[in-house]
Structure formats: structure tokens, C-alpha cells
Amino acid sequence: MEAVQAQVISHYRSELVDRIRANGRVLSADGLLTVKLAKEFGFCYGVERAIDLAYAARKVFPPPKEIYLLGEIIHNPEVNDQIRNMGIQTIPPKPTDADLGRLSSNDVVIIPAFGTEVGTRKKLEEKGCIMVDTTCGDVMSVWKRVRQYSKESVTSIIHGKAKHEETKATTSQATAYGSGHYLVVFNLAETDYVCNYILNGGDKQEFLDKFKGAFSPGFDPAVHLQAVGVANQTTMLRGETEEVQRRFKAAMEKKHGAERLSHHFRFFDTICGATQDRQDALEKMLKEPMDLLVVVGGYNSSNTSHLAEMGEAKLPTFFIKNAAKMVSDRLIVHYNQHIGKEVETRDWLPSGKITVGITAGASCPNNLIEDAIRRMFELKGVSVQELLAD
Ligand code: SF4
Image (cartoon, rainbow, N blue to C red; front, top):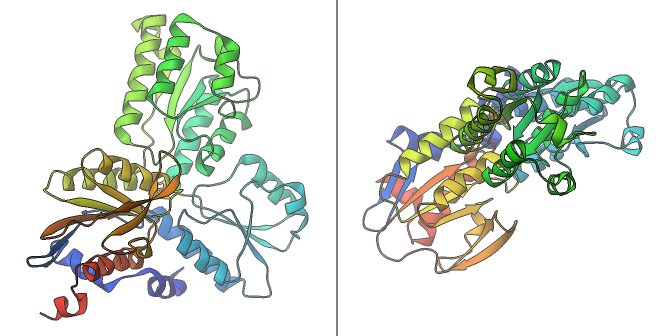
């Protein structure tokens, strides 16, 4: 790991970002543009470790040894391209038997930071592949909690995105040992629907249709919502997760009585520290006067999309994956997570003196944040080079 850290730093570090950080997190061209960085942003410890391990794997197993990666190492396209440039090949996060047929017992397989499903790991172990497991410790703590629920015949209610790799890995833990069940709820509307079912019953088929793909095989809402334990994908919005817990707790208390609550309800806070720090830092920055917010990161990154959501609630916010999306001062192409695609906004950069906040998700390297800062000044006609030389 130590031997590759210099290489990792050379790929993803930014002297400009370090300098702005050391300078109160502000870079200003008087009269035109002030850029503010959130106190916490960018790479988290879990992502740094996953990248270091992938680089280390390439060093320990140089070509012609084959190295495969299950899906993406993290949710950032530039970082994944870099990993592919090192000759690490990608196979689907949930490989089919045909995908596995390509692998031989001597091949190396990297498990990404969000982990993998129990069944996939088992198949790779049976095949005799050499595993480089970069699963983040915070994700593993959620698994531990879910396995505990499962042992106690408590259904895991997972606040998360059912299709996200981390949530898929977590749900596989719920059913791997014993007779566990799970249900994934994405938001408060889905939470209310389930709570209403707990309290008043309802149409079972409608329930199953609504949550298709988000519950365990054989799940029956009339049977498996008698005792529930709440856990979450590590990168959800903390406030929303707390509300999900509160609503389930209230429903169970109303149905079973306060004295029986411990038999029917459990919860555990499984938002990771890094996600929390980035959300807290943005919340604080959003209290300061700013004209707009730029959020840099991969569009499939859960923690980044939540930062964008927080920004949207307060001011014009643009979620971009790289600086090239700031096409000109008249046009920006940015991701609209509510419709799941990029959209164009014209006249996005106000003329005159403005303050722009910048933050980035846990999977975004500092060099991409630097590009965004440089582009912003460029669009205002200011050379960062000259600005720093002053
Ligand atoms: S966001 Fe949190 S859970 Fe995900 S890799 Fe980073 S530290 Fe781990």
C-alpha cells in the first residue's frame, strides 16, 4: 500500500485544492468571483483505501496476471477509467455463470468499496480466485447489524436504493444466514405506505407490486412486518434516515404497545462518518451567502446526489461530473437526478460579482475539483495562475 501511495497521489491530488484549503477554503478574485469550498469534501477513507488496494493489486500481480474488478471500484467515471488504463478488466458486479467462465483459479478479483453479494463471493471462492477485498469497514458494520436482525427473525428494513451495489450486498446478508427477510424503502412516502400497512393492513398484491425487486424471496407483508429492524445504506441523508426510524418506531409502538416495543422494533445508526461529515459541512456552508453551488462527482454516486439534493433546497445547484460540463458562461450541462439524465441550463453564471460554493462527493478526486475551480475562474476571465502569483 505504501509503495503505491505516491502513484495514487500523483493521479488524484491537487496542489490548488490543498492551497485553498490551507487558506481558509476561499479563493477570491476581487470584484468578480469568490469560490468557497466546504470544510469536508471529496475522497473518504473508504474510497482512498479501495483505490490504494486496487493499485497495490496491480503492483503485486503485474501483467500478464489477469486482474478483474466487479463493476466499478467507486462511483466516479474518471477513477474507473484510470483503473482500466492499468489493465484491470471489468466484469459485472453480479457476474453470470458465463462471466465467471472467463475466469481461472489463478485470476485476481477486486471487490469494490461497496462490497459484493454473498452468492457472488461464494462462487468466486469456489473458483479459487485470489480476492482483493476493498469493502469499506462502515459497509461491513451494516452487514453485521443486518445479520444480527436475521438471526433474531427480525425483518431488515433498509433505507436505501434497491438497485445500488451496496444495498444489494447488504440485502444478500439478510437472507444468507437463517430465515431472514428484508424490505428496501427509498423515501418517506414509501415508509408511510409500509407503516400504514403495518397499522391497517392492505392489499398484499398491491404491496408486492409496489416494492417489486426490493424485498426478499417469499416476503409476505402480513407475516414479515411483525418485527422490524431499521438499517440503511451508508450514504443516505441522515435526517431522512432518522425520520424513517422514527416513523417505523411510532407505527410499531402504536400497534404493539410501548411495553412490547423492544420485541417488535430495533434500529441502529449506520450512516458512515464520512458521509455525515460532508453533509454537515455543506449544511454549514449553505448558511453563508452564495449565488450558486457546484457539486462535483459521479452521477451514480449516492452520497454525491444527496449533497446536490441539499443544495437544491436552498439555491441554484449544478451537479456535474467534470469541468467540461461548464461549456461556457452561458451554458452548463448538469445532472438532474430526479429525471435521471443530464439537462442544459442557459445563463447559469450570473454576471457581476458572485460567490460560488463548491463541494464534492466521497468518490471525487481533488484533481477534478481543481479543474472545476479553474474553469469557473476562466469563465469569469480570471487566470488562476496570475491570481495565485499576486
Ligand atoms: S462513503 Fe462511507 S461507507 Fe462509503 S466508502 Fe466512504 S467511508 Fe466507506
